[in-house]
Image 1 (spheres, rainbow, N blue to C red):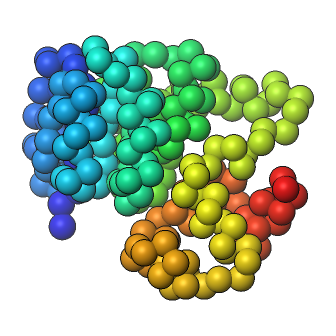
Image 2 (cartoon, rainbow, N blue to C red):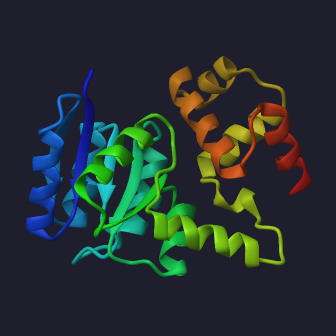
Length: 209
């Protein structure tokens, strides 16, 4: 199965460059290109791509706002920001919105391909400069980051049901989704809370309430 990728980028030349390098890969295919946020918002969900490369500063909408909205309705899709912005506000707003990775447009195309592969496997790809800024932010911060606030509404609901002792299947039935979707949510929860198992996640959840 090929990795299905959608591109949301209003710079037509860069959009085309991304499509070209993606389609050159045997294990990948570009299933859609969007040049504005409005069309992406209307059509992305039906396409069900595995990975979405999302620009931040679109002509009509904010890519961060798009990610925030779409992660609620597209829980099995991974969103990776691909932008020229490197300031802390944009970086952390994007991560809080639900982005799994953050790449700078100056990255070589082979790094973009590696990032797509990493994101598809559940990783959190970041450009070196971005990862360094994120690390510095946490090292310099004197207050523990309220990691629970990074979770989406759906992820908080899933974690709450997990804390109540429900099994994955029971949570899936309650939310009217598949077990795979719940597993995807759980994976996102573990990544955002920086934990490795259910017990650690529940403890962190209970300590914040």
